[in-house]
Image (cartoon, rainbow, N blue to C red; front, side):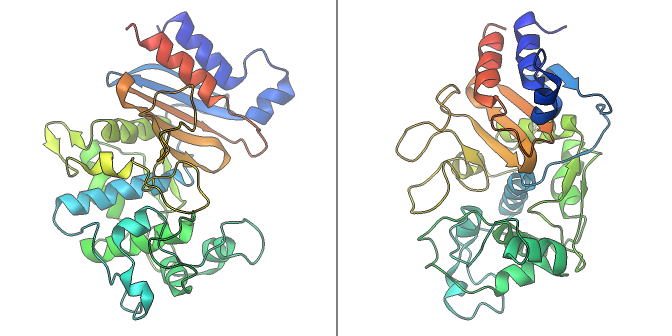
Length: 319
């Protein structure tokens, strides 16, 4: 059994003791805490079990960065590769893999979920999502401006499909099979390409496995599956003009380029995958800790991550 301090942190994450409407507003569905590579605590809301697949939404973006690392390790992809799409015969031909990862491609985009915006058009109307996103003009010179874009992830994913020669089995063949992840379901678009930006389902335990793989810098059961510096590079934010606070290369990070912290209550080296409605895989290397939080939290003002994350770090630092 986990310690009272760990259980108290999970209580906070689920809103235990709060009025029922606040608990519903918080909407936590699962918590999994992995310390030193072992599950030390987990909890599920009524109707959810360890076997229930949950949608990660944009956490798929961080998994996409791992797939890119797998291809880099295999020598099929480099961060400096450009001329990534045959139709990019203009300035877009200068866009590199690293600029796609850092969301600095400069491609025109609007992530606002309204009728007629690029994000909703891509997800709900376009049969080939990457082709649509890649068809948009440049709004900024490549590398000059950071703007969060699900379209950019799907363009990157099209490059991964092309370089690997794999279809909808891309995630399984490059990553999930090696990690022993059996629950993952990654939905493809009508063109047969994974919707890497948004549509990966997995159990909370398997999301935790993905976090543990990142924590171990791509080393798994004695095999180095990512370039040794891949995680360090993709979880370091670089100074660039833009709209995002603490976005590195398809991972969110606690340390901003100027050294200040997004969440001062958490260790400096904390980084995380983040998805719509409150999905998180939080990795804290200095504490050898992975925390998965899944839920449906469209109206929650604060998931309490900094508070219960700080408490979990404290509770487990002595063990």
